[in-house]
Length: 284
Ligand SMILES: [Fe+2]
Ligand SMILES: [Fe+2]
Image (cartoon, rainbow, N blue to C red; front, side, top):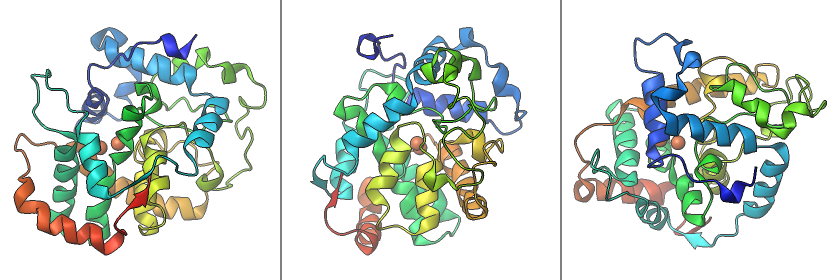
């Protein structure tokens, strides 16, 4: 399969986020999503077909080498948010909520519950890595459930069968349970599929407390934080930190409201919050 020849199957990048939210609708059985019907949402199914076939260990290596260390230039958090906001699809009649609106709805829900300031800030920056899309990355390399590469895929990953088309599926080393890793080596040593989670973690890691780093880095790692997969690679410290990842998740999934956040009203609070943790410009 030639990656360059593929079309982006999602009408809008947020279709993936909406799909995940519907997968974990309150009251829905945890395992129900595994029997998800590709015909019900062909765009999402095609998206996962591409994602699972093309996120190889070699691909992840190549993207890490391309983006890390960070070399896309310096930007303030605000400039990054405004840059990401250019992603809004004017022709989508379903929603007039922008990327910044999703970030503010997430962070404001966290603030309303009285969590610490760094937690609110994590909510505000968590999806800024989607700027990868504006750098020309295809959807399957920006969003989607994330998973370790270089070892066996867990059957708890959504659309698991699509991994059969991944060249790593037939690699004797990579199909081993531990693959290139040691038992309980800790997730910091594990390479995750490439996307907006790893990218925003790398951009912000020097400035945010560790629980926030975990929230950003693993917020799409549903196989682990929702379904308990990959415990054989996780350390005790990962388990402690995943409590925070789980605390963050409902704010990401369920904070979408019809009401557009009032940017002008919120601006002073966020200006102070960002200045408290970040220097003026950071590397992207
Ligand atoms: Fe995200
Ligand atoms: Fe999000």
